Image (cartoon, rainbow, N blue to C red; front, side, top):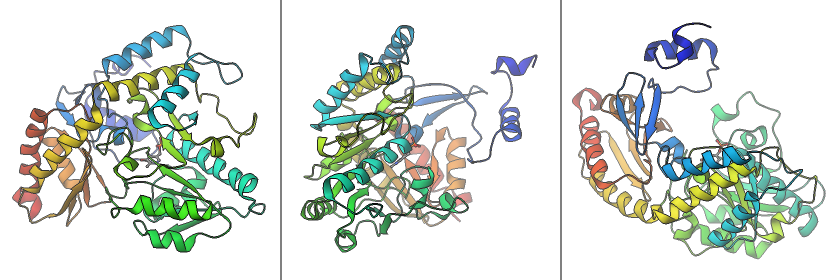
Length: 411
Ligand SMILES: *Cc1c(COP(=O)(O)O)cnc(C)c1O
């Protein structure tokens, strides 16, 4: 281990790619851009080329890369104390839980690390609630989820995915889940039984290709849940924290879920932090020893999350997302291209659905200095950091227009 590789910044893109493919597992198929530095909406690769980040780490970077206020908190807290485990208390956890309460009106917060862990936490709480509070017979609890869902990658979560690639070869699967079509409240009403403890949905499906359900969908689900004594749980890991133009996407409707599952931008991209924010009725079911995580609720995570939330508020990122998203979507809709099937979105969360594979378009955008990733094969997802300004969007627009109308790609 001597020489160039140790410095870490002096190899070429091809050399890093080759090294990663030689020694790393193949569970992703990334674009071949090797990022070295980033700030705000811009990233720079190892060759010194700059790109606009229009993915924002799947919405974990709503506050932008290396936000200075979050960095300051991160460094200050890292010098003070980073981990106590929950065997002892730390002074940051109660402050984060109070912030969450003040932000959402929810009674309790249970912090975890990754999004999938927060989803697992909500599923466990829902089942426990079903047995203890609703009186569901032992091991009979059912949870209703939707077709096209994305909730993470654990064995239980992939047990109810409808995406073959996420699921195939990972059985035996966890039972107890019913899958219904997304956007169809009647299907949920039909699927509820006496043994249903919860319904869990994404207010807008991100991974499925920015799928926006019909107006009133969440209100109808909530009504069905209230009527049948079922918990109403929303996975806001991607849709939340300003992405859709509201603090949480459910706020586009008049509902109040029993649980909000939160992650990604909760740390502004600095650190894995997730949480279930819920009613006392639901999260109150856990007693000491029944659930936990070594790193969950650690003081570094909590301090970083508090500042990440403060940045969202101080910089009015939800409002920004709503305003600039509407502006950019209007502009995108003016592009005349034979390959565009639909432009849809909420806030700075826009899907451009094509009539063909989106991958070559993402590669061409990369050449033009824009980083995007296709989702569901035919959709280009546009989700830049919410701190982006109009000028940057205008710059991006010219490049989207060029690529989406390029004769080499569209014919
Ligand atoms: C990303 C995501 C998850 C999983 O989060 P991880 O941190 O990758 O485990 C769950 N639900 C939704 C909606 C997501 O977008």
